Length: 560
Image (tube, rainbow, N blue to C red; front, side):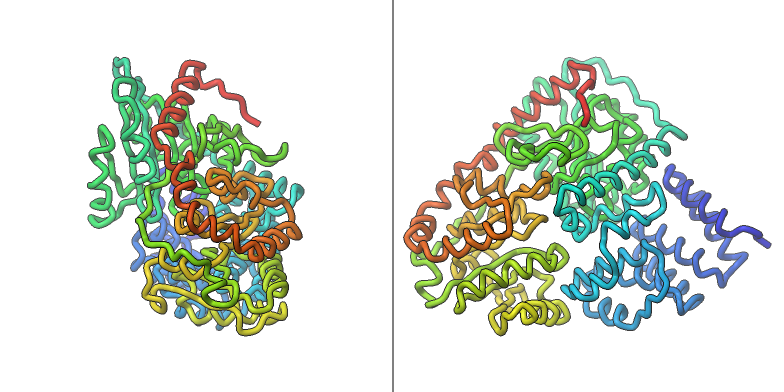
């Protein structure tokens, strides 16, 4: 008889964090064999299986956990999240509707908060709790589980709340640094060479930064650099084969199913890299930025699509650009290292024909659109966009994206706007309904609305390329300024504002300025094509200079 199963589960979790996956799985399986009705053992086992991308086994384990404890909600919430991740949204929301949370942990409440944000049910999201409050209630060292949640990043909308988010990140980073000190990895010496050994590292699941890294790698001087790509979490052949076309950009491509942070760090350290650039950061499920806590390379940089700070003392800097780096004091944690011109290299977009006349003239009313995901939206965003529509009574707003193919999301979002006095002026365009390739959508749109404080970032490239301007609220943290970066690159810095009232005023002003919008229809594609975001050679040269300088300085870059 096992007297303390909770201690066994805690030990198994620690082993998993340290890369001992088989031992951790074996301990939990032995516990389940001894206590087959122990719901939490089945739940932890399901989580481990999901981390290992064994999704079918994970779902079965979640269902066993639910059967063992029908009143518990933690396993049900994780199963719902697994369903959503596999595109089974209606099934997930139907299961969620049956939940009766009662007294639940902060982690479960945070998951529910994110679930209802995904469903655009802002009332239930508020009832589940404030995401920052819930993140702060998580056990010390476990608050990092929340960083992949857009609703948490969106909640950091004031200096005080951003400070609290940064404190959660630091808490997570301290725990990861302690893990690394318990069982460190040994960095192999770099082979004798005049070249700097540079590695781009990221996870296999979409979206990934490998294509972005390839664009830059093709411009790096091979006389000065040996450039490799290391991809983890590729559990099957399809996941591995998607990287075949990138082999020409790198001197070597390594694709592994490994998901343990320590095992990833060991693999990187064994290759003797001088510099490692993490492509994911905290921005997505499956990211393993914690591998950098083991210091597998002399120089370590973070270059995610969404520049959330890493928080790790072992990281030299997060790559940014001058617009992202122009944040108030206290807007970040570690040093922001601006690349010359732009933080991301953008790929050339297809030459879809642009309608010469603006949409409002053709339709007799203005049309707004956004590419925001439902969980990027907060009540203040809905209220602000409703205020714009109230200023322009005939105007309509289109939500574009696959999330809006889910009837629950559409129903909840319409109800949220009706509560703000906007009735029958919200439309949805998703692949199943429109049949249009995304760029063609912008021919029926006058102005794109960038959500705040979580910006669309590189997604704004599409409307700008189609001659459609956007309004963006440039916030107080780097990830809140990605839209401002693209607008500034397109010569539209005046469309970046700093308050809610200014956002409404600028949108209304631009709708009335038909002459300017006609000019932008005609000229914006050419102007945007000249933005530094498309000058990959310039970005690559800037990155190379930073890496060389950090190596020469002995990785002595200061941190905030």
